[in-house]
Length: 456
Image (cartoon, rainbow, N blue to C red; front, side, top):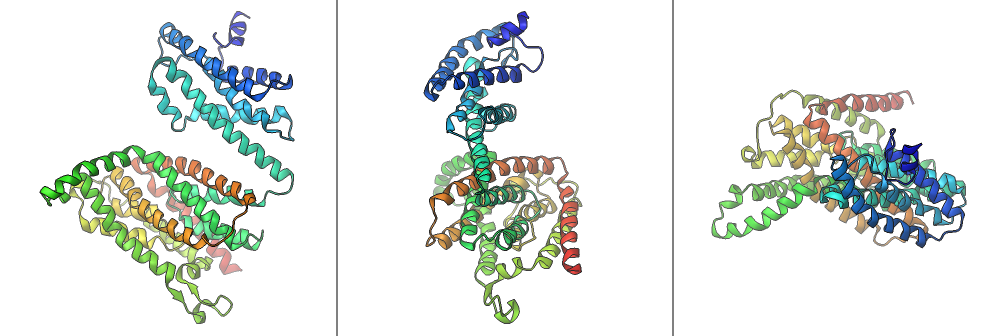
């Protein structure tokens, strides 16, 4: 009873899952205050006051328990849970207890996973770091809970098609853009479903294409922000030395990497332009299709996409042939960078995986695994920006309603979050020599679709 009583006041010890228990108790307290008619601003002010009171108490707990983040100290979880509970004030039709349960789930998830900058805030030190990470997790949970309940309301009112498209396209793009399973191949099939089955028009689809590409760019920056910004800082420092000694353009590692990115972008943009602007005659594309681009013609051929998925599986499986990758960036040349760009350009073909091609090419060239991953996504940034510029130009003259704006923003956020975790998984699998595992998936999906087309 003494332990339970002290836990109720959020400064004591709970023997089973202290953070979860404290979050559950504080969620119940928040529901009680909401039921009594306490306004949202009073709830937010109470949470902030509790935050500033928790900081000195956290300093005491650190000294008392001898830990940088003492588990028995749970006042920080209370602050985060009360921030998450502000979602109750959204004037929802759904029961308050169900809305709070969603907020509780999201807060516990973000408190455990700790996405940026939640984990980085722990390094601030002492009481501020202990409390700030839960405050940020609470803000994450507040946003995620609001979107979850809003989608619930939309589907309950029979207006969920746009949101369903946003969620499905964003999840597929976030996963397949980075995992070596061909995002273009998967998106072609998914988008065809929305156009033919659900009647989603082409213009709205282009808006979603822009949204999910912005989301994947955000996820790249979230995962690789440290090496990217270090590289930019070194490029700025080393660029001045080129004027005094042009040979530094090759001698300085940062400038050499920049040169690799430029060289790799040349074949990528050339092949991408061919696929984007090369017209396929109506005699080949079919009378109904009229003149279409090479990309549209290939993407509209599911049998060809299936064959390319099978080919991607073969390339991924071959990447395990060269067991030792010893080449660093100093031993990598212009020819290797051109090959990476060529591999990225070929991956414009629907069914061919971009990350699968570029990372496999780096591995087969003997490049160290960490450099394979980093160079693969360094050369992706200008390619994605170029594709994004073309897509924005295509949708520049199209109208977008306010009702479409939230699904598009939702697609951006979901593709960024899913892409973040997919990219983390990819880095882990490449470093631990499990990259070729995706070959079996590509063979299975490509073979299944090809068999379906042959039987149909």
